[in-house]
View 1 (cartoon, helix red, strand yellow):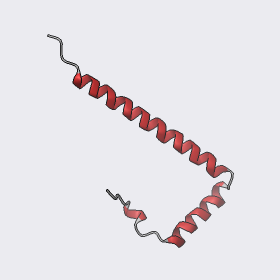
View 2: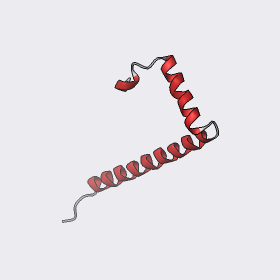
View 3: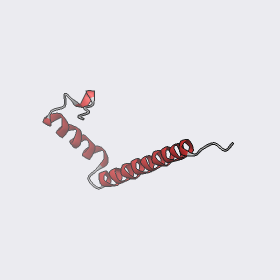
View 4: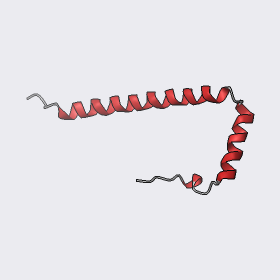
Length: 67
C-alpha cells in the first residue's frame, strides 16, 4: 500500500534541497543527528506504549468473565 502525504506529493528535488539547506542553517551539521536520535527515541517509546496498551486490551478481551 502506497501512502503519500498530500503536501509532499508536489515536492521536487530542488525544494527538498532547499529544505535540507535551511535545516542545516538553522540547526547546524552537528545538531541534526542529535535531533534525529531524539525523534527516533520518542517514536520508539510511543510505539512501545501503544503496543503495551493494545496487548492489555487484547488480554482483557481474551479473559473469560468469572461467573
